[in-house]
Length: 124
Picture 1 (cartoon, rainbow, N blue to C red):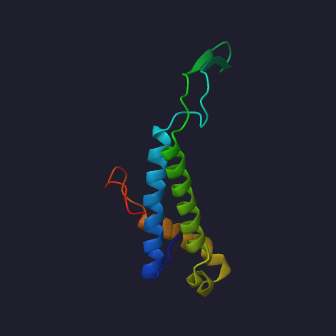
Picture 2 (cartoon, one colour; picture 1 turned 45 degrees about the vertical axis):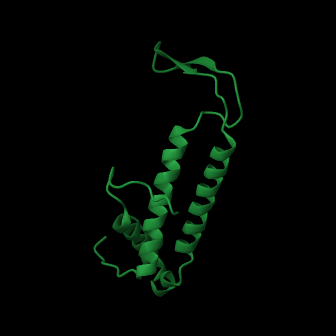
């Protein structure tokens, strides 16, 4: 991709907000128990290459707390709304149909935060 796109400020802000909300969502999901509902643990073996097996164990899951369920839903809804706002932004119609995918990828890279940089935005 050799084209430089001049994205509207609002579109860039929406993409940056989406990155932040997605980072919050991923952080939350990593901290949650493996099961939404309380569930007893289990162990199973998975066959890898040849005779090598891998034992996988899931500890008992206490399930999600009500506030975790609400936060997960709120962040997921926010990601969907931001994605929809970005995809349906009127600026995309100013591009030739063949350019839209490249422009979308450029927007994602333009606003992508550095890995490990900053803390999640609490106001999202």
